[in-house]
Image 1: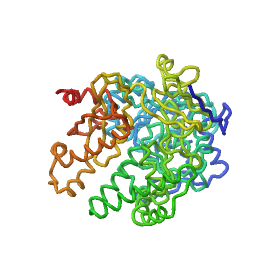
Image 2: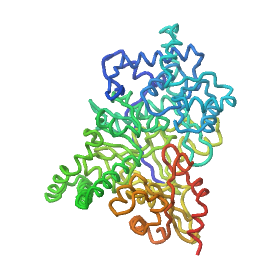
Image 3: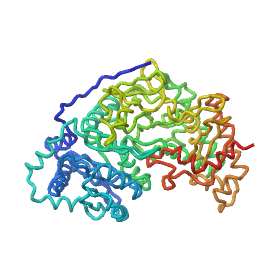
Length: 596
């Protein structure tokens, strides 16, 4: 058993809550810009005083609507400015915010609203409102539904016109650090989602210790970040809170509008899930290869140079003169364009990414600060810092957090970020929390400096018929890094050998078809049988197999005619593969891999 602890850098009294920071800033420096809001094609500044006034308006309206301290209020929307106003308005009213993914089905909405006992819901679109109406008969506690597109902020603010400032201030001060601030439902790769009880203290302490400790070199004066992850995801929620707590200017976007918004907002750092940066890399590679054979070769050489340059920086090292010269040339030809694609000012990005892409982006000039966390740990549990980084690990625990590797290799956490428990689920709470230690279900290792490396999932370890334990994650990560591959699932539990289901990235196929002289009308189903494409996938599998032993290597694979999607139930909203659903839906293809 190994253990590593990092003392908290910031403490707060039990009287603290999430509304302290915005209202203190509004009182002390009302003209400070705290957010930028997209209006048409331009970004308009929102001052601390303006934000606090909007939050107060929502809080007063909720009080007038009969929302009491501790009541639950749902938020069903994509990431947008109004979400942050409503989030803080709910907290200022003493209520508990319950985020719901915008892509949720009526059945999922019914479960989360019903399980949480929400009395009110803010829903973004007419379609969301219709979905709620479809299941409203099964939700007796739900008394108010407001449409965000229909002007919910103004409507609710109007309801509270007669609520006094003193009443609003009293309600805002009623919540303490130990009170639940939000119920964040796990995305549920298996079974019903569980509501994680995240307290005011969890969010405030985690945000302040992350900003002032773990990422203090990133969150400096003038810092700005563009939030485009779904705010129903705990990571996005922590980014929102950390920005408000740390004085980081916050903007909102979403994936469809991300590239133009990055160019106009110009963030100094980004926080994202791995797939976003895999797409950036794969898109750049495909574009270069599609323009000409020469540009494809230039990009390949630039990528290898970036990786070599970054590796030379490890351990405080320095690149040699020749490598520095090559790097300077590619900085003009390739790297500058990649940096410009994310706004031109990004120096750091936080996420968990494979070692090769981590080195690539650092070599380009965007240092990837790999990290690790769960909904149950209020997002971050460990993170690399600019001054303490080991690419290929997820870094050291953030201040205020302890990490332990159990005898069976499971990663355990204890500290300021660990949830209070699961809502209405004492059995699951007891299973996950043991004497303050959270059992993550992930396997990992700690080095002597406290850097954590995640090696697989405890419950996703495949045991072949020969008794060999195989962690699928390293193989899957390596395969997904290939530009033509969208998703994959490694299988082989109880079988003679390891196999894989692979899906194709449709965005990458058009330039590949043009480059390889294939008809533009060729479908994914036709392409997966094409010998040239099959050869590229074979090479990708061979490359992935280099990361494991012969007994763990993929012996057979099949390219599917469809991708894994959230709509089909194969992915969670945070893009995790639902292993059990995929294995059920593609059981025939899996069986065929093992049929002589």
